[in-house]
Image 1 (cartoon, rainbow, N blue to C red):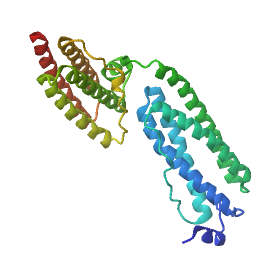
Image 2 (tube, rainbow, N blue to C red; image 1 turned 45 degrees about the vertical axis):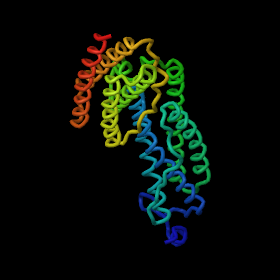
Image 3 (cartoon, rainbow, N blue to C red; image 1 turned 180 degrees about the vertical axis):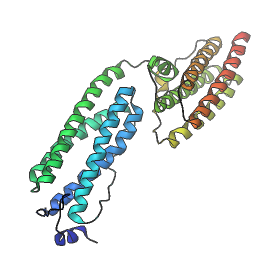
Length: 305
């Protein structure tokens, strides 16, 4: 069915049951764009909240996401009221994978959305539609302020990023942790381990201990990837090469291995002190136990050189 054909025969009514003046098909087009935008924002902000480095930012982004879900419902109701058919929302351009880029994307989108909603409000004849988009525009402006605030905060954080903010060291320095943050720190630490072993093998050859543990760590990555998929979380970008240095000797390589596993065990012990979903607890326990075995292997290697 052509929704515009139906719309021309349909007498729209408001939520109180009173008939209102029909709007033009241009409003229906704008409604569809607004619905697509809200639908995409809901998906993007779920992803962005999982990447947030602090609990405060995560909760604020989830509150913003609640506003977007409320806008989506209101716009969908108006669309169905005007056309007699349910909207079919479509995802727009993808949300960035990196947190800082996601904040920048969200700030720009919110600012543009404020202008768009004001245009719809100014052009609408119906009072209810005018007020709905005017209130939504005010919400979007408030969202833009929050995203600008977090952009400013994270610009400084990004410029001073050190290994202390990454992987196990980052997890151990965090004042509090959510399950998504734990998964990100754990995956970052596995990235670090792979990068460290690659450097060692490149410089000292196929040392059996490092070859064996490198392969075991790959299984850890697969186990964590399963959890990321299960909980609908994007994998963090691998930035490990920025934090890995080349050891001066094979003894230094073993020492770095010992230090890495000590941090790794402490990280998983910290995670396991939290109330966790059972599947996450099982994986974290397995990885902690494997790290204990790796630590013993590195200590034996260090004693031999």
